[in-house]
Length: 224
Ligand SMILES: [Zn+2]
Image 1 (cartoon, rainbow, N blue to C red):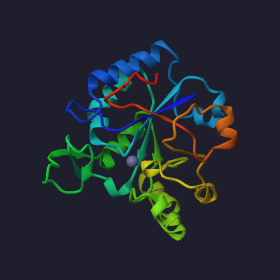
Image 2: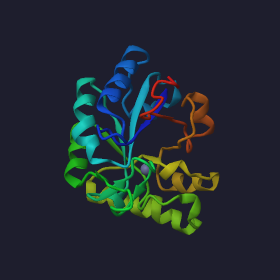
Image 3: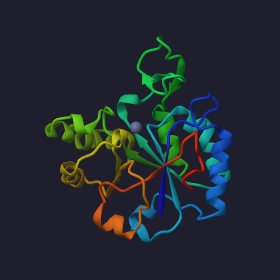
């Protein structure tokens, strides 16, 4: 299968536009078709495309969800508790983020709250875990990995009444020393931002750093 990574979907000049998101979904439907997140249980033999969203932007709920429904797609959303119900600020010129507005960071991006997360699950989508704070795990001490990937996972499974079986590395940063930590924490697999097909070989050799393809505003179809 191919696993695609999306972030914000909005018509704001910085995110993936709704028009491009629709074109992307139409392309996938025309070519390989979709699989739902349970395909990860079946490994790389499952064909088709799995759609994943990192960070749980609020616009995923109001903008992306109606299109996912229209195309009958169930997606996997990666949740970071530190972002729950918060607002962060983007800069169109710098192309990155700030926790506070000002200095060119003038585009607000909200993140889903508990009600939206629970509604996603009620509608048949799945949540994966994306670390407690979204720090680069490669910058953390190994002792901190346990809090980021296991302690926080356990806490939030209780709060949300579900299980997180899949992990996505914040900003794709990982090292092989993290794999046993994730396995012990009970994850079935982990997704990176390395590009490639998540085929049977990848599931056999790289279950804790499976590749994905980014879906970006520019050059959207360059890699399809
Ligand atoms: Zn992220």
